[in-house]
Length: 188
Image (cartoon, rainbow, N blue to C red):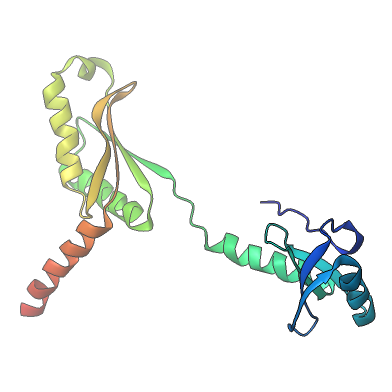
């Protein structure tokens, strides 16, 4: 994420600027020449912070320090961004109940982390010739095992390898589910 380079000193094109001083005080609206003279007197740079404002806002400060602080803020913001992926869980017609339960719990973990989950019923050989309703039901039954509230973003449909559906977390339904489970746990 490259940030645009701000105009400093003689690169500034606006003839009038709202100027903020080196200590953060408002110097008011000044002509470009007066603002440059004020920056030179302070021994700092004149940086156009908000070029789209009317009149544009400029600040008197050290450009190196300004760039350093800006890059630090960007790094912090970038670290907070959570990338959502589409994770994939694959079952087969012969997958046992215990294995399906393990895969369902793993899918629930991914949903809790904010990822989408693509559940796929992998078909090979003569399984491809089985009844479509039976195969869809097998995948839907797996989806019902997932112990986390979700919503279907892509319904179960035929895919190149068999049948697949994509689900994503439903925070509202999950909060409701946890609220309902709390009183039951307190009674025990």
